[in-house]
Length: 439
Image 1: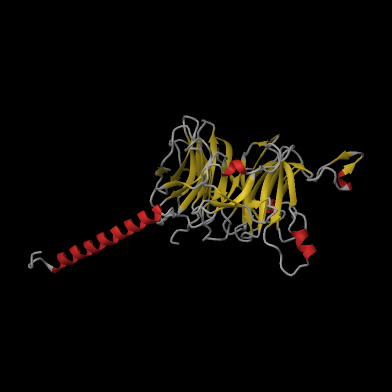
Image 2 (image 1 turned 60 degrees about the vertical axis):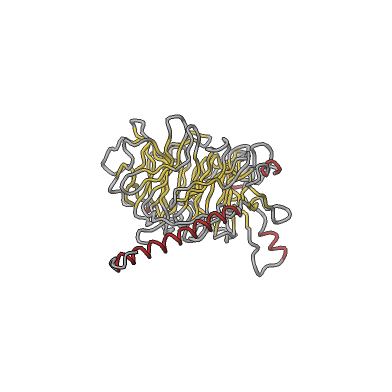
């Protein structure tokens, strides 16, 4: 090196050399870890304001994408034409998205999209479909998604690929499979007969104290609660009773969400059913005919309570008004709710969108936020409403009269309507990153 070289240049050379050595060491560590079959998942990203969604493809498939605040669309890498990316969930830290897809081997498995590096990795294998990833609310460090596999609910370790059965609770209290084993699902006995009694979706409540699942029945769907952690300070008989599964509600179709502040359940039921048709209260039987307390409703349920679900947030006695989709705000105080006519067998139309307090009778203090008062937007159907991470904005899908399936946003006060994807394609299932701006 020229002794007359300026000191500032020599420092830059030295710094560059140190960085090069550090990069080489990190690369060597990465290669060694991957060679040891270790899960190497590094990097973080500032995703506040990003919206994940599914973009419908012309070939009939769907692709996971991220829409940034400037309107740019980032497609999930590794997509194959004709394949279907479907249910997805943000990891609570906002750095990863887990999703179910058949983009490899034409079987639905769980994938992880590292938004910092752009890497997409399949975290499960096998010919038995795995779907519906979700994370416990209120735990920003949660990293194990709850998934549906072989008609049951499982807790997945995305690093090792091991999954532990959550529902139904196995007789030996702990049942584990290696989802990286191609034949693991083939050795599982599906719960129930045929498609009946299988789990469609599952969510943790109050951390991981409870799990609530929606199961198919011959007539429709059933909402079932299962306690996972035995209560303390109770007799053996009381513990045994509390650890039994409990049918919360039944209907043609059920939709659920979890209050992120309290960890309690909010659910919408369409087409009321008595959970046990052989145990109908006398007050609902008149002149030999069975009556219903309502046909459609949105209700609240605290699993720590021994009482039935609280009085409805809203209820309807006929099919003119049905409540199709719900979403609880980040602070737990407000509830998004679609409403429209019901056509039977779980088929409804969402024509309006409301924000109501998350409390019994909340509809009495609700605000219709879409369509905006006094404005004609030319909308056909509303779908998949969700909240921004700060709770100030609502994001939802809108099927317009022109046939476009657009993603739109509006303030929680019903102002500042925006079409976020006009002319960019057809989209569905928008979900905002859980990260807060400046967080």
